[in-house]
Amino acid sequence: MQATFRRLYATLPDAAAVARTTSTPRAVRLRRLQKQKEAPGTGESDATPEGLTPSEYARYHRQLAKAELLRPDGTNPTEAEWLEKLNERRSRIRGVKKIVTPDGQTEAQVVAQKIFLPNILFRLVRNHTPPGQPYNPYEATFRIPQSVTKTDIRSYLSAVYGVKTTYIRTDNYLPASLLGGRVKGRAYKRAVVGLVDPFYYPLAVEDMETKEREAREQWLEENFQIEESTQKRKEILLRMTRKGSKDWRWRTGATAQRGNILKRIAEQRTARETIIAETKARLLEARSKGEAVV
Image (cartoon, rainbow, N blue to C red; front, side, top):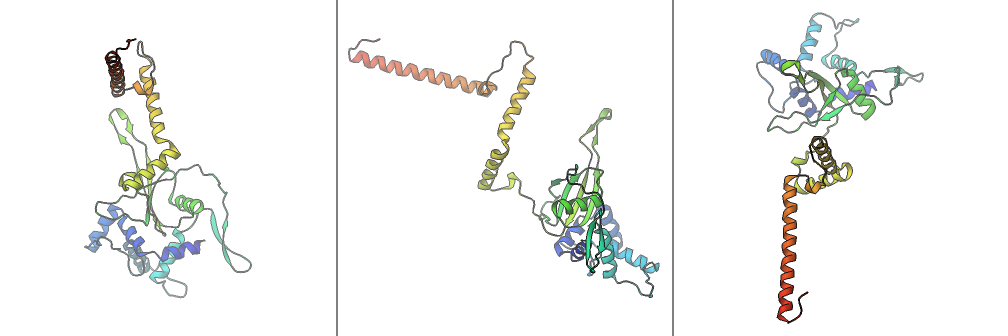
């Protein structure tokens, strides 16, 4: 398994490399800009031909200068070999180790306790896309519990969904502080995950064409009863807020709002005037024929 992840990590698609450059934290981009004096353009990657990022390139040459990469035979690994070893460590899966079978084959063995129903939630949200730039399909953004680590994220996505990841960047969001020591919202952790295979987030209902939007709304209503749930929620709220009023009694949904009340009054008035007009016409017709008016 680790060999497979190492191969996929090393053969990073061009679009995925661009996504990795785009999602680099702002502080890291500013620090690199001070050294490079030129930032990569839109749709370009800052990686070397061997696939090293500027940070990896600097780390490799720093270890090379300190003779930390010197092998027993007196040689040093190349950039590609060093990156392959680094990606092997990055792509490790928690609870899984690589073993060699008696017939010489390498396979992954689970050494930890298996968890069949994890009690953590991964909420998939849209990627942050600046105005005027296309959506990046080689990244996925999740909202996860703050206790989840990067290794947990990689293991969870691989074991549950079979998703192959490249890089993972996380940041914690704290709730806004209000007056009086109160807070607004909840704290959460955001994880930006690099993907080997592209994933296109479904369009929002507001961004769809008319026919597609109507079909989606109909499907949502048939499967989740959104409008019915909204109406019931309004009725429950009305019961909770008005049941304490004096001489108040529950009425049907047709007369629960002022607009509906006026509409109902207008309908009753129209029906009454229609009956009066029909009765008047019948009486005039009977008198013209000399018939008795009952």
